[in-house]
Image (cartoon, rainbow, N blue to C red; front, top):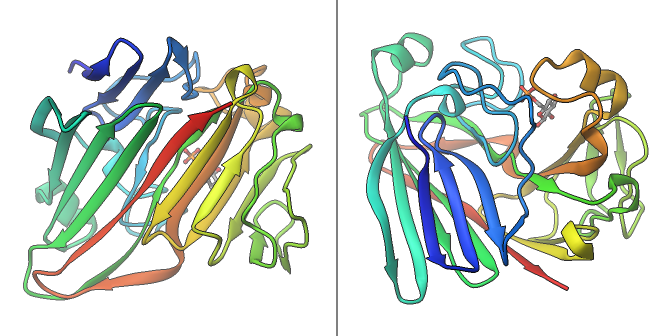
Length: 272
Ligand code: BG6
């Protein structure tokens, strides 16, 4: 299984691993912006620890299958080889139901994941089609790991006033901070957040801007020291250098009728 390189030009490139169609690199001006653990496992079984794993059809623990669903641990097909068109490099990946997925979750579907690398920006779009003749519901999320210089100095906006379920302290509250900063284990599911988030403190002090499409919620996660030690595929000393800001449809389930498609995604840009 080789990684697919999506090269726009010498300054802008992304890479996607067919295992989970996991984006494993996004480089702008020779700077890696995506965080992937040095201990990430590429065995075609475990989800890749970092980049952008795709969560579908279930966010979090799931009675029917693995945590965060099977999309991130399935082998996707390359549906469109990387091509440069209209100033962007585009590639697409597909996953359809199989005997293995139907054994867990008995529904027919087709996922199309399109990665578009532009100038200092990247789009990751997911189309979820119900190809069967009965309705189904799901949750989904783009589990984006951002590389940062020092997570204690990073800020995330667009969360103020939102209802948040704090999975660490198991409590629901309303976010009162304009800029969310983290300084301990964080696992927070924010509902109906701003369409745009700015994440400061990226590589070389740059700021990421995330613009969501049909992904109403946002999860903010950092395992911190103790959890990091407990994770075999994550270095003990790596947690200061990443933050997950995950655009998703997770606070409520999304229903899809036969032959309908749900289109969602995000655009991430980087600037000084
Ligand atoms: C986050 C969840 O999205 O993903 C956390 O909110 C979870 O609860 C984290 O720990 C990582 O999950 P996993 O399955 O990749 O270890």
